[in-house]
Image (cartoon, rainbow, N blue to C red):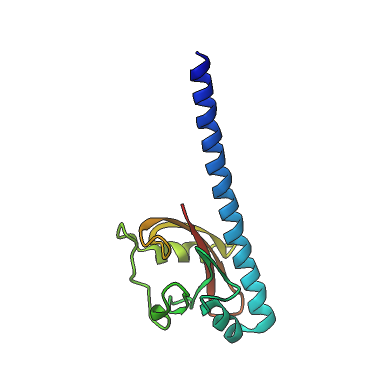
Length: 152
């Protein structure tokens, strides 16, 4: 009986740790988006986009990076895939065929103008398709939205 209680306690601890780690990732992604929004306001769109596209810049930290699109889904910044910059990605789907840009716009068009979207995406570090959750924010007064996600 004691071994059973110890095993269950260990499992509960592991689950709690995973949940805490995901919460931390959510907080980190959201904080990076807010920092990027402030940077746009301070430095301007052009300077900010140059910084967002720099794979060694201050808006890239491992799996965390800022991406930016026009409201018509033209890629403006994507340091993990620079070849996508300038392209219309509206019709891109995730690994399950989900047109996640539609979900992006549901969030962006909401009263808050920001929020979370889940989809499956290629992790540039592991090179594997993984569940991803991204925090998005519409930038007021600009034809622009930014985001940052993390892999689960």
